[in-house]
Amino acid sequence: MDVFEKPIEFLKGIGPGRAKILDKELSIRTFRDLLFFFPYRYVDRSKFHLINDLNESNIDVQIKGKFLDTNIIQQKKGKRFSAIFSDGSSNIELIWFKGFKWIKENIDLNSEYVVYGKINWFDNRPNLPHPEITKINNYNIKNISGIYPIYSSTEKTLKYGISQKIIREAMHNLMGFLKNELNESLSNKIISELKLKSLKESFSSIHFPKNDLDLTKARYRLKFEELFFIQIQLLKRYRDDKMKIKGYEFTKVGEFFNTFYKNYLPFDLTNDQKKVIKEIRKDLGTGSQMNRLLQGDVGSGKTI
Image 1 (cartoon, one colour):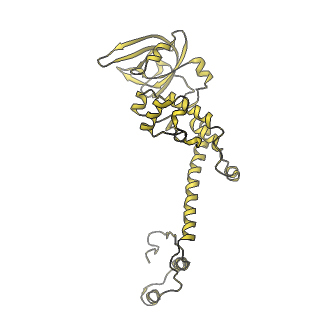
Image 2 (cartoon, rainbow, N blue to C red):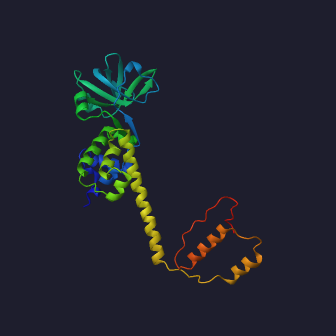
Image 3 (tube, helix red, strand yellow):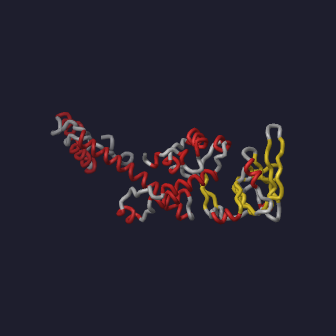
């Protein structure tokens, strides 16, 4: 089996349950599908926010501190898990409505964490629903800081615990698995002359860019690749049509054309118009399909 067509359930961190949801919600069925599941935006995780400085212009925030307290709160429908997190100057509430059993059991009140998520405001106070939490030592080991990919998700993927963190870890595992499988698709000459990143580097950088320049170069390479092969397909189709499809050969100019041109055309053609007519006549005499675009400004005489 082609390794790129391997079912996604066999990737570490996915499994049959998550694979079923990824297939249904995001049409991700194979390793290839996940590889081409590009981030739709990126965030800068090199900066930390202070809780006292948060305002409604903030969207994604990252805070360093400790948990002070945790509590399960009964609601009209179900329960929510609430945690008070402090950066030393102020506190913020972190909230989980689903899938909080593991988080509740593993939060260490004596350890320092990095929390990251999309900020929400209620009664003029900020909170973080379903944030990512990482112990500070793991944060440093995994080198999380920098430009961070954000992938598309749905209500169901989140409901079944397929968070941004899960997708990113799966992508890390995928890139490690495919590191020797991403063979170059362009010639060394093209890559050298256009100063393109390698295919392997480009996929790695589109998912985990080191900086803005790295991301820009990866995007350029992958866009170039797509357009390059589209152009190759169009040229091949054009060549095949020329070679395989035999048309009628117009070997001479007909009487109707000559009569119209000499006796009824009320003005002389310009040199450019005469040139185009000769080119079209030449095409019609080859017996091959003509593929021509007649282009000119308004009023330049295209209709004739």
